[in-house]
Length: 166
Image (cartoon, rainbow, N blue to C red; front, side, top):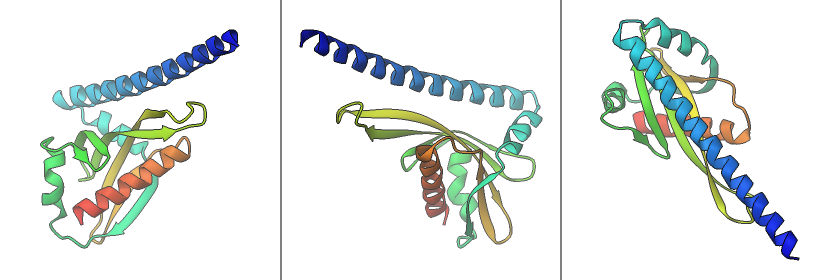
């Protein structure tokens, strides 16, 4: 019985340690991406952001424009004055040459899993988007989701963003 408790405690420690390591990697990777984008932009190399934005080509959501002044509502995020948008944090926002916006975001996802026996575990997710606007609609693009949680978070971000700017 004592061996079983030790094994369970060891497995729980490995599980929590792995999740903490994954969160650290996600946060670190996001910060490295932001640093590269800012460094390239500072020396006039906007092609780095443009090339990255081209990789974000999968449509997440579309919505008709109902607020003609949506840019004023969104401007504080582009200027870095505001970062929190619902459950999401816009870590970096950059206007691209074609007028679209590159958004590097993170989200904490709280999960009650069977493996953690009811203990809530936070996972940090990095989500990158491009917001393009035509005369009649907003279109939000991203890269391919990795799992159902990732897909749900992308949809939730689109819904939150569109509610905010409309």
